[in-house]
Length: 346
Ligand code: A3P
Image (cartoon, rainbow, N blue to C red; front, side, top):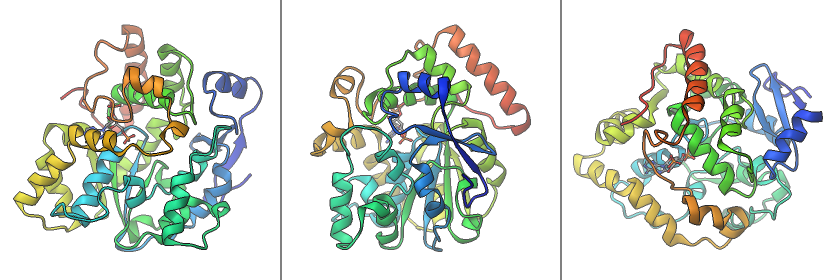
């Protein structure tokens, strides 16, 4: 199947799909691989791909783009708060971040498994702002369309799957994180979410990662599309590790890029409000009613919820020498031409 982006999508099949579905019990609707790029995405992606690609962005839009587990939610909260809630008094600040800052490509994620559909609260939210909305047209897509300006939108898709004039129109904030922390964070996420239900080992997961077989990958291709654009006036590229090490310095750069003109006092308050501890506390207090439909409580109790560790370098002591070596060899091969350098701890 040819997509509007020019990619050709082919359903995974045979032994490759059977193996993935044994390890990822949630991927009931299959997966597709795109050429060029080798992008691996849930089967329902093809239903939404062209609508996402043809989405017209507005000058006031900010699109947060990341490979999964690189600090997307943190960045959404930081950017949304800087733009909409500088004095921490916005009446809707307590609503889930993906309602205030819509996740444009999440329709496929909500539909990729055979599990109970966890879309209920998104649809309720959509009906509040668009009573006639048709859930079959993509709930997240319509939430994005109906979100009032200025919109802060989230995507895990790479640049090549979004409209080619994106950077001529809107601002993009791209966040990168070192692959060793990413693989452990993604492993936890894949075990925690019923829609993914990963049941394999860490060792196998590292293999999936370095073979570019996890959804939204290849990890390096995602970076390879964004990194050369890092000096574009409408692109702000930063590293999770730098935000962790010095949030004030990073938020000052964001303030300039976004044109939010915040005072030192406002920035200090936002740093505290968006700290890992504060965000985790707010999430734990929120008790959303369909949490059981989305996450495995036994994994949450044992290894933590969405806000797991929030650190740089927690892979140390967790990855074996062999697993680390695999990631190092893969990283070396991929960074030779790219010239990107990660910090592996803070
Ligand atoms: P860990 O699993 O390493 O703890 P994403 O939002 O892209 O899915 O990324 C999730 C990762 O960001 C998780 O990493 C999560 O704990 C971390 N994170 C979320 N909020 C954070 C914050 N305020 N400060 C630091 N890390 C945060």
